Structure formats: C-alpha cells, structure tokens
Image (cartoon, rainbow, N blue to C red; front, side, top):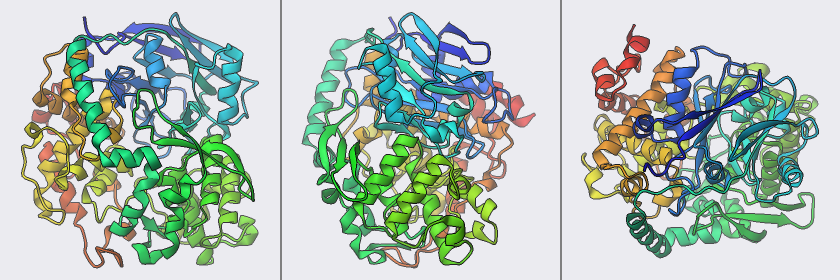
Length: 624
C-alpha cells in the first residue's frame, strides 16, 4: 500500500462545468512528491506556453503533499499553483490551516481548475466528487462573510473554505486566497486568477484518513519531533508571540526595511518597539493554530475602542508589521492591526499592499503626486492615511485603483520617474527581509522562479549560517562565513534550494525546521509512503522540482537578467550593522547557476543535467 496519498486528482473545467477524477500515478508522486512539485508537473504538461494569466487557459491548482493531514506535527500545508498575473512567471503560494488536510479527507491529493464560469460559482468537494454551486449571493462579500455563509449553507461548521474577497473579484494583481478565515495564500496574485474564473470559493468536507505505510516508524519519529519542539526556546517564543517575535531581532540585525527600503537599523525609527511582539500580544483574545500543530503561532486579536476598532481579527504577522509599520515609518500598532484586517477581509496581500503604500508615500514626499489625486495626506507615519488608502485599494476606489495592482503597475501609471522608487523584483514586492545581511535571501529573490519570495531563500540562509538542523548526511559542502567568497557559495545554495523544494512539496510547515529543531523529513516520507527513500534521492527530487519550475519560466520566454534587485537594496547599505558593505549578487547568482548546471546567460539547465534528473523530455522545449 502506498501511504501518504489518496491517489486521485479532481479536474474541473469551469467553462463547460465538467468535473472528473483522475488517478495519480505512483511514479509521478515519487518524482515530484506534491505541492509545488506535483503542481509544476501537471501545469507544465497540460498548459500551453504564453497563456494569459487571467484567461480561461490558465490553470489553478490546490495541491497537498504526502505528509499533509497525517499525525506528523506541523503538517497542514498545501500550495496554490498557477501562472502569476503579477509577474508572468511560475506562481506558488503556500497556506496552512485545515483546508489541505480536509481535502485529503475528502479523498483528493489535488484539485486543478481551468476555464471561466459564465456566472459566479463555488466548488463544493466531498468524498463523492465535486459540484459547482451558485455563488451569486456570495459575490461582493468579504472573506469572513463568505466562509460563514458557506458553512451556514452546508449546516456544518467543519466545512473548510478557501475563498477570495472583493479584491480578487476586481482582479487586483496583489489579491490573495484566504483559507479558514485566518490563513492566507497571499503572494503572486493568485486571488486574481480565481476571480478571473468567477470562482468565489472552494469548500471541502471529508472523513477519510490518510493512509500510512509504517505506523510504528512514524510514531517513533513523531515522538522525537514533539519532544524537540517542546524543548525549543524558539518554538516557545513562537507559541507565546507568533511571528511578531522576529521584529526586534530583525531590526537590530539590519534585516527589517524602513521608509520604502531606504533605511535600516534601530536608528531608522527608534520607536519601532511600539510594534514589537509584546505590544501586539496586548490585543490577543485567543490563540489560533493550524491542523496538527503543537505550537499554534497564530492568534485572534481585537481592538476594543478608537478609530481602529476591530473585533476578532487575525494577529499581524512579522511581514505585515514591517510592511504597514516600519516600511511606512508608522509606529501605531492598532492601525497595523486594522490595515491587516482590511487586507484579510478584502483578500489582499499585506506585503504588497504595505509596499505600494510606502512607495506612494515617497512619491508624495517628492511631489510627484499630491493630496488632490490621493484624497489623503500620505506622509510618512500617517497611520490614518495608511488605513484609508488600504480600504480604497481593496475596493479599487479613487487612487486605490491605481495602486491595487502593486508597485510596478502603480509606477507605470504615475510616471514622472516614479519607477526609481518602486521596489520590486520582476513585478513582485520582496518580502520584508533585506537581503544584504542575508545574501541567501537575495538569491531567493532573484534566482528562484518565483521572484521576490523571501521564503525561497530560507534554507540557503540556514545553511550559510551553519544553523541548519538537518541531519549531518546533508552537509556535503563546506560551511561558509556570511561574508565569504561569493563565487564559492553556489554549491551551498544549490543544496539549500533542493532541500527547500523537497520540504515544501511534502506538506510540512517551514517553521518546523527553525530554532534548532531537527525535522526527520526523509524518515517521515519513508514511513508515510513505504518507499525506501534516502536523503540522496530526496535532494535529487528537490533539485528536479526546482529545475522544472525554472523550465516553466524559460518556456514563457523569461531570462535571468529580467530578475534584478532594485538598486536601493543591491548597493552597499547606507546605515545599520552592515553599513558600507556590499554583496556581489551577480557573482552569487552565477555561482548558484553553475552549481545547478544552468547556463549563466540563458538560465537553461544543460541537457546533461536534464537527463540526470529524468527531465530529458524538456530538452527539445528548452534547447530546440
């Protein structure tokens, strides 16, 4: 028995309303695992190159991993995959909550959706298959209202809902998909793809259990991980504060950006402490966690009075504290909570939304735009103006319509040299981590097929700092100092990228490997599936997934030189702990490409590399 997989995909064509099941082959599972790996395998084969991201021929996938929904701690994750309307590249956006495990409980490892519905619909998935239901009464509702309405309609509070809000309906290129009200597949405009298909929501309910091949082995590994998580001081901090615990350390280390990426370090805004984890915790009303998570880093917060009064909103994450806080020189934590709540209810990416407001503040300061166009005095730190503008963006009202597609589009619309202050990588606003103190993050921004994604450089950075909790067998390259030889870092980054793809495709939460906790990933995969699975095979599989994602972009005609860090964050830092120090990101990327056996100019994997990864069928597509 193959464990970890339910063995079926659900294929939905919204144009003609057909829904069919398709078996999932074991060879495909073993070669691509799940999540982004399985997603890129299916989309590359079944989508033509050059499709319009908001057109009927673009596919949208919701893909779990073999560990999703098992008894393994922190195994709740699934990935939304598509072609991004924001960047025109391969897109993936990961989320937790209960939706992924529930999808497997309904008997499916993945759902792939194509076409465009003639009217608003939502997709109901159950153990017998799926059915399209009228969503006219849901169109225009926010994400919380939509989730509540579907659960009420089904008469079951355990129906799990992934939906879009008004931002996705209005095709905002920074719109997101909201899962279980509080978890977000936020990046790359995936909400706009869902909105373009007039698909308001997916709702799923099931009772099946994920099969496990070796339950005794899994139980032993699970026990060890639970003990490690319990003993980890980092996990204790995450349990108490959530990701806001990152803020103080990141500011001090120079990795948190201020004032539209122009400043870093504590001196940039000494009052940043008003946004720290203790400040946010004051508003907590209850803790909130994902399926099977002993940590529970999420929380529900309320602001009981004042202009930013909200009831039971999602706890701000580090990224949104930075995007609506430090990036805008705003130290009012209640306004950040409110701005985040607006984003979550409208279904809009908080990283991108805060970034475009910070960009607009700089344009206002420089006199390119004024109050007459904006309707507000968008000065640095003006928290009332920030909240008002986020609301306008969610509704696409007034100047909010100009900003609702991110900084690249906004700069093009504003003109007058605004492009100089639009901080993005190939259209996507980077995560709130300055890459100069963490070069591995910078390679994630510019060398990964999903540009601007801070999470893609996580494993590279962990290895670079010698802090990775992976088993010793993984370390096949020497550890290098943070400011080591830039031309020698490629093998380390290639190793990190390969492991990261395996990890993310399995269904595990990224935070599980933080804080010195050793996650027996390969052991988990072997115990759950029954495969004789080694670290060598796992790293090869991760490298195969990484390469296939690159092939998707190459088939779209994209080139490496199009993925560049803005000058403001590629030049030597002007202040902070690393003031005056520069990182040679071009050399880093060349070293990374060399280690992956990719051509430096075109980014194409060499034919031998494709053969070694059993991707030889891509040679003709990429090399002609």
